[in-house]
Image (cartoon, rainbow, N blue to C red; front, side, top):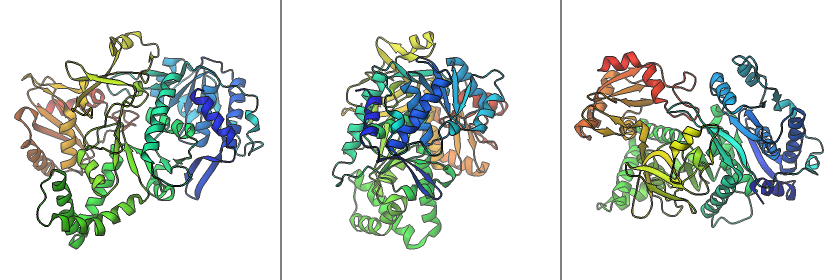
Length: 550
């Protein structure tokens, strides 16, 4: 059976089982297997009525919800290609993506999404409002009767087109097929079962998710939960994320580094502000823990560490989530210090590395052997190696068949059967990978030095917590400069940059900087939909300020 058939089989065999929960202010709103099947049946009928045919591209625009899940499964069940779109992205960018792949139908969550698209598209395709198409109370809820007699496709060709973030140019449509998904769900299922090994009882894993389902990693987590017949709790309001997290009480969840770093910074600032015994125990316990990692323990380290674990670290973990088995993190580099912080308080952070083109995942941390700063070994069944310039190359069943209607881009990224990731990497003797930076982001100064800006940016962000964003510039220049955003003063910035420079060779030092009042954001086009910096757009936006630095 392919992944869709497995999911539908799970839903049919356990119609009363809760498969999705929306975390709302008034509690958890549950959706059973029968409810989801009924919605899928309704959606399939409406899609056919709207003229959707096998092989068509169908846009899907809306925030996370159970109905979004039903629409996504329905589109694929009809043999069409789902094109998931990020609801916070600029409408003109969304329109460009839909025009690029030629969507014949657009499914929107409601009037606001529809109006946003129509405001910049004079002749859009037919639009289906799925908040109305899927009734509030599904007919015959409880037995999944709307699914009776429906067929799902056998071998699945292209099932989805997910657009890249466009950090280094125009977004491209990544095609993923059934074989890609089938392979990946087997790997993620095995790894999650390994993570939860030893948990007694037959209850579902408690999984909470807040990232947009239109992103490849989030989508794979959703499908993995359905494939495993495991309930998934969906956040519905990022402004209430802390409250939702407490209500969900997850055992694991998928994260981006920004949230974990914000949690760490918040905890440390609160401890520093409190001062007294709490600060003393935290500082001494942390120092002892860090020394123990490198086998440089001192006489009283055991005493301070035991005391800190009992009186400070345990309380921090209780606040973050006493039931957490692990936090899973991907999409961008995670500061080694942040990963160590969570390890110290007893919450492992498992890193995942991959791209949309690799069906979201290439490597996953070994549950039993996590090295801070590294992203784990290649998942079973795929190969990874480094090219001569240090670029990560990947081969395996997870590699996408190509970009939609981009033959030149396809020729560029495939090299003798290997996919060129565009990422710089390192791998140790045990096969544990580290991501250094992006090949295209490399800065070459007039002195001939090749410099990856990401490690320097990370150092500055850690040393200057008040700064929300940092971008290093200097390609074709004599020296490096930095753009900073956030409530930071020039005096403090200068002091911190001087301290960071002392740890760097001369050619990697920041000589000048500019503090920008305007942050990089998705709305102003300086961040991609996944939150990554659009470097070319930022340099163009701040062209005058950058020129002034030189």
